[in-house]
Amino acid sequence: MIADIVGNRTLKSQWDETVTLYGKNLFLKYISIQDEICSFTYQEFDRKVKQAANLLSDLGIQKGDFVALHLHNRPEYLVCWLAIAQIGAVSVPINEHFQSGECSYILQKCDISHLIAEPCSIGIYLELYDKLRLKTLLLAGGESENPRVISLEPALKQQPDSLKKQTEVCSEDTAVILFTSGTTRHPKGVIYTHCNVIYGGLLHAEQICMRTGDRFLTSMPCYHMDFQEMAAAPVICTGSTLIMSEHYSARRFWRQVYEHKADFTDTMSLMNRTLLMQPVQPWEKEHSLKQIYFSMGLSDQEKEAFEKRFNVRLLNSYGMTETVSAVTCVPPWGDQHWPSVGRPALSYEIKIVDEQGNALPPGTEGEICVHGVPGRSLVQGYYQDEEATKRLLDEEGWLHSGDWGYLDEEGWLFFLGRCGQIIKRSGENISCTEVECVLTSHRLISDAAVIGVPDSIRGQAVKAFIQPKEGETLSKEDVIGYCEQHLAKFKVPTQIVFVTEFPRTATGKIKKNLLNQEESE
Image (tube, rainbow, N blue to C red; front, side, top):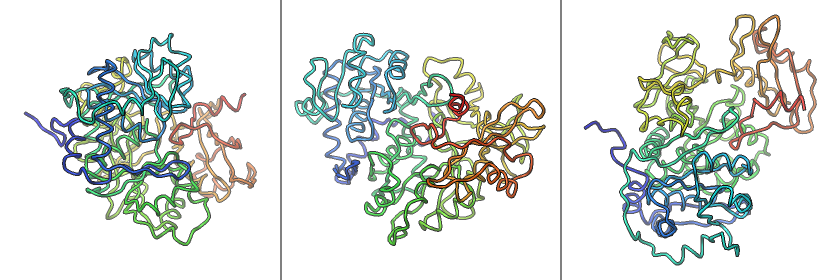
């Protein structure tokens, strides 16, 4: 037998164990956009989970069945997510912003006939009910008189709060299919086993030094791995408290951190920038945060300004949906080697390879590859997409990230960008991320995106899309002049476009594949 930190644990068994050990601890504090708060201990929430599991079983949902969740951040999402795990079924979260065509693609791809929606999304499925051959349509957060819809809350009250029957669930069983936003036309369904879910939770809890009773505040969307693996799973694994915000608001976020005494939170570069734009408050340094888990993308000036203003350390990291958790994260102590994203976490290995797959020496740029165990520390692949899975995982267990970076002599990883976001100009490699960080350090620039465009002479040209701060104006010459002060000449953008806003994913990432398309329209 070969064991790892998960062993044979599952989301079902981990939840049950935590409820047994820490049942009276506060599990969830939910903050609505109206600042209304509801709270549940582990024992109180478990009763809802068991009621929901019984309901799903009574509706004919069995082990291995797929259940879609079209919900935004709300307690019912966690109730259903955990209940689905209790009966060995598979949850398929759907982006809350998806419309009819995008929803249809996922349901048909996974042959889903059971779905849980909310008032703002239920109409999509009533229109598509026959086309999608739905069997179960549950409504969370409201009631409906439509005979095809089962209102969740009254239906739960009819169920006992202990399981009617036990289902055997194994760590190798599929727990979740997470559809990535990506740059392809259709999102890919990433397969998460029960082991993946718990592995990510245990690993991230250790990375940020989370312990029983700590409080983790998140506003990341519940259908995203940043919510599931960076917030919910580590909280459950440690018997801690999850403070879930319905939606991110730059105006309200830091007050939530302060008032609810959060020990941890997670941010992305867009959040850090918008928080810096808020008026300074006399209490904003008097928080309880130990540190902030952070996903790269800030300039030196922005990082320093954020840490100084809010009196908190940012833990730079690197990971992707397919790696389950952050495979690197700088330590909470000591030298962080900024702008490094950290050394490989326990149980992971990293190498940099060239286009032929050959390992490269320290200091040489190439594709980032991550070694782990598919189905445990890495995902198994993409649902019903064998070709994409083969491109992702090789036979030796190396995951090919499609990201560009390098390792230094001491094993610190430096992320440069997606392979498609490395501009090759006159034989030189240019990191879009590096240029973007310089641009966003300008006092009049709110955000920026950089892409490579064809150039008949140099191969590619550097094109920058600039979003000025509200009420501010600057010229192309201003931008170019600033870049010339901070970048090598070959990295300076030659094409500048000003925009009022960017197309973004649910987690705030700019959809670069749409930039030139939107400009032409």
